[in-house]
Length: 345
Ligand SMILES: [Zn+2]
Image 1: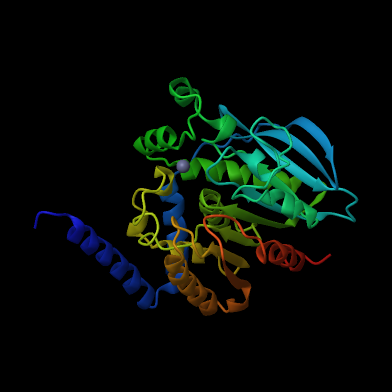
Image 2: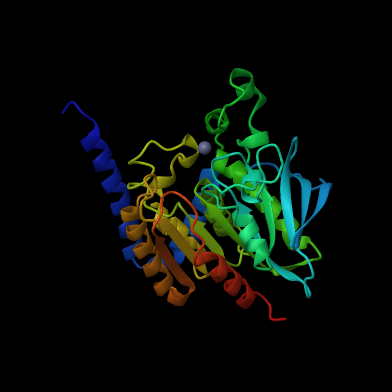
């Protein structure tokens, strides 16, 4: 046979058959910790920068909330900026959300700013200024700048092209050669931002969730699997099977984690968040995370939640739209879910 299509198909089928056998063999209790460990190992780890002190860079009074810019560091030699949005006139400590953007110009895109930091008065893009939507609902939000975008593009890429859309390729390839992944680095930084938000006096540390869009949802689900203190999770524009999304369409290289399919398909990995509340959102015209794959994945995740007695904790919304955030149900769901989670007041 000249072509490799059949080979890829065979290898894929063999991998998922192995997963099925392990699941069926009655080893479910063993499989979950094993998969978590495999995911942690596959994305790789980074030394942590325990001694780094957060630095306040800016504090701006906005309508209904305060917007701070802070500098954090998850690993030695690398700092990052994050916006912290705190609703004004809060009555006691607030629930919080780790808000993770996808491909674009960085955290400014979700807090209502243009790339140059000025206010974005126009129609929001596919990220829908979602951090603002959450702070308006009374949630404290942290929006870290995901490495590879906006001001966190590499100087090496900007030297070649000042308009380079991202540094995903250079970061991913070089980290993979070191047995690490860009997902691992992004998750380490996201978890640092989560810790920082949970430690803020305005925030009730036991009521912090995460919401991510597209590549941000990849970071959000891995973060939630690795950090059990993440109470609730919203994934939008991402949930799918590997086969229907990152194997079917040319995706950014940051979506590929060496060896991961040896362990599980994506729905089972997302299902590791069970039994914590999970909301899955997808546009019915999303061309890069197609809705058919979303529906297949959601069915698998539903079965996992039901098997753990947590069927009621999973909600989904397929909205009329493309690769974008809707929020028509998920924002309020996240608020309700965080109000109900954690230690009672
Ligand atoms: Zn990318």
